[in-house]
Image (cartoon, rainbow, N blue to C red):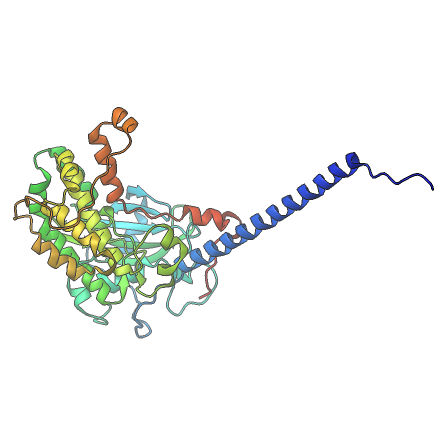
Amino acid sequence: MGRPVVISTTLLRPRFLNSTLCRTILIFVFLAFFHQQRLFWTYRNALSAKYSQTRFPEVPPGSWRQVAQPSSLDVHRLLKTRKDWKILGHGWEGNTFLFEGSVIKTFKPGRSPFRNCVPNAKGKGDQGARWPTEIPASLTFGHVWDGVLASASNASGGFVPVESWFMAPSSSSVPEWHLVTPFLPGGSLDSLAHKLRASNNKGFRDLDMQYRPSFNRLLRTFNTLHASGFCHDDVKPSNVFLQNSSHWLLGDLGNVRNIDHPFHSSQIWRDNHQLEDCRANDVVRALKSYLQFIRAAANDSFVFDEVFFEGKETLSRLFWWTIDDAKVMSAEELRVRSEVESPMQTARPYALVSASSYKEPSLLRRIFVSRCKRLSHAVNIALRARFSERHARFMAMTWVFGIQVSDC
């Protein structure tokens, strides 16, 4: 008969469990790798879209020549006196200097890819073959080339003008692009807000009454930009400059893109909660920038926060009325609505628009955080217009693979 075969379960059980665990780990690793690859290519393509070129109107060969120099500006002298340039600011892409009534902006190659190709230049690198988009954009809207493309966009005076542009060695002897514009003593909306707040003599209603006409004129500049087929894509108080207290200029055109640019449908654009139509996105960001300016400059910002969510004051009514139709908003439509909700009007006894009702947080937060700080935080979120690509750069591993750009 023989002895019966006995299978030891004590031997099979660990082997079975180890086998199942290995399979589970392998499946998890495969899924994680697949997900990582999907995110890698999604954000790599999104960054490639962001840094793809902006198409500007074609001009005859030779039209992109050196901008005519005013008698007061000598480029050779400008470069020889580099040591006398006063630093105004440092940035990721370059530095900004002041010298004798001119602002010199330099662009460091290699920090971020230059999106546009220099006309008639061919090559792969940034040096020589590519230049910052801000230069052709500023020439398109802030200056006229020999009368070419002379249009309302150039005649409107709504953009920071250009004095000169050139490539020259920097202090480190590496050639850098330079863009020269007139110095505007009024600064930007950010600097104006600081000055007004320091004087501490006006509330938000008085400031709105004083500066709303300037904001309405700025909307005409956006209308010109959008009618030309472009979006600004970086509207914020620091990019609106003052020719004088009543005439605001749109500057920092380095992110100008065509309306149908692929970046406007990219994952980065969606991650930052931007509106699908870049024109509507510009307009809403412009209104948020204006409210940020008024709030920062006022000596009663706490009152601004109190009435912001009520929808009774003309400024808050204008904001929530715009937000209701944000997806289809245009610069002209917002200008009309701004005139309807004129600061000359008094506050309404009840809200005629669907203002966002402020919801009180949990009891614990109400105990430890004052209502003033809670409201301030809520208004900050409502007016927030930040834009970041840090997450995209991390997922695309740009420190290893860089950013893919097409050849010129």
